[in-house]
Image 1 (cartoon, rainbow, N blue to C red):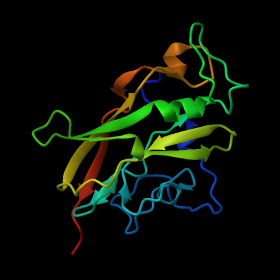
Image 2 (image 1 turned 60 degrees about the vertical axis):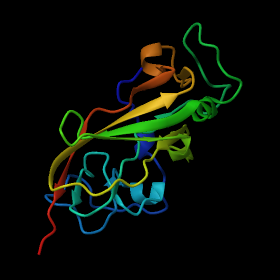
Image 3 (image 1 turned 30 degrees about the vertical axis):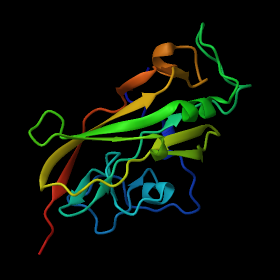
Length: 201
């Protein structure tokens, strides 16, 4: 299994317009809430109006702001006909992305893991956004958290765990470690660092 599935899926949404301005993280958050990553406006892609905490250009917020943790996304082969699987995996009749969507049971978010401020939030399958297709023609789905409450000024982390009702393989290869996800709960990301800044006077 990929330890952190940061495939191109999460950044290859094709938008009608490309917005500039996100080659590196800003010293402080920009005044608007748009998270631009590799030319993609993730706020627009996921229908999020709050500050996004996610890929490296989008890891800052202001005090008092609610924030959302989207992704990373999971990409699969386009259909059952083109899918290839590891030996012994019983391929479902549905296309690989439909299999992932059907088995997705939710995600757990741990904020400031290992500190006195640690908090955990658990959500169900309703947080999975589906129907995306990357520029490579592969479908993908993305878990997108509900908005979290504002955090105190300073450094924070968030780690995501995902739950599946059964083993899932993406149809893109035959290596179980790279192409399959296990049944149950497993860690989906590392402890993503981000910073909350005070608002200027």
